[in-house]
Image (cartoon, rainbow, N blue to C red; front, side, top):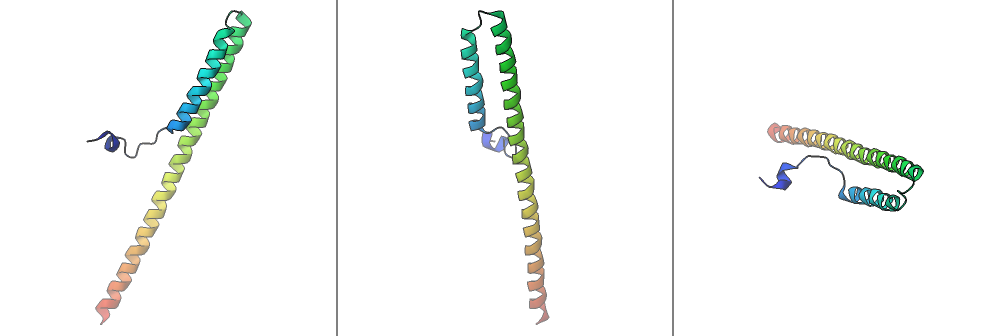
Length: 99
C-alpha cells in the first residue's frame, strides 16, 4: 500500500499554511533571540511567541474545519446526484418494459 493510499481521506494542514506559520514563528524567534539579554524583553518575547503560536493554531484549525465542511457538502451532492440517476434509470426501465 502506498503512502498516498494510507493517507486517503485524511484531513491535514495545507503545506503552504504550515510553511507560512513556520516562517512567522521562526522569524519572531530569531528577532527575539537578539533581545534576550534583558529579562523584560525575554518575557515580552515569550508572550509574543505564545500569542503567535495560538493564532497560528487557531488559523490552522479553521482551515481544517473548512475543508471538512466542504468535504461533507461534496459527499451530500454526490449522494443526491446518485439518487437522481437511479430514479431516471428506473423511469427508463419502466418505459422500456411497458412496450
